[in-house]
Image (cartoon, rainbow, N blue to C red):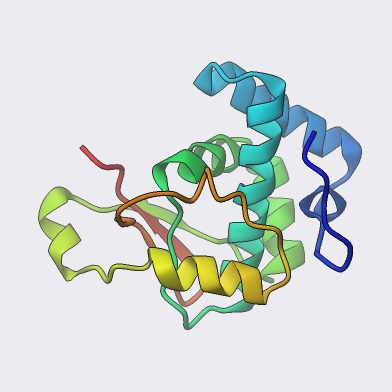
Length: 148
């Protein structure tokens, strides 16, 4: 388990232990991960989503590694809707983009990483290493386009 540095926001505190455990197990099942990687992925998923909700005008997007957690969470709709209401006050949409739409999307990885750090969350450097991100967050709505 990864330790959280003093003074940083702990993603584990954003949900009940039961919901945390359920989502970690779903990520393990959906993406064939061990528990340690699934917990890291879900922690970064929550940090990303809360940061996006707190910064609706900032374009943001997850790396493909973090997006795996987003997908598992979105599919657990009752818990995802509760989370969205609590942290964004509205549903955070996750809308896929077609390949031809990608050119109009900003390169957002650097800004996403800066926003997560500014929001006080620990950043898992391994899960955020990517050349770019082809998803972005705008007006509290997540947009997703998996790399092909």
